[in-house]
Length: 94
Image (cartoon, rainbow, N blue to C red):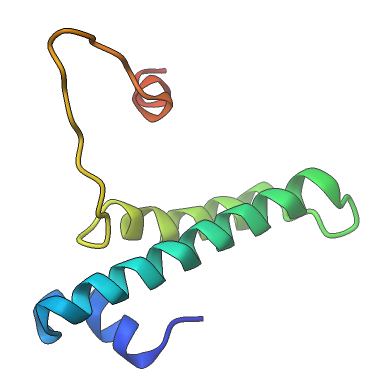
């Protein structure tokens, strides 16, 4: 799933140039989103191939640290005028 350069970047973000970091972050984020949507489709739509909850949780466990690490390119912005919460923030509070 991941190329050698993507794996190297995950293990040591300083091993690649700044310009190549942007490319790798984008590639890895696309792969994470694709993997997540594929797993969701399998678990929701196909009863023959449904993953048991333990396997699904294990797969999610391995992709979650990637989303929250150096790879994440989005920054949180807070605006005092409109204190809106994102869906992710609401899920964390629940």
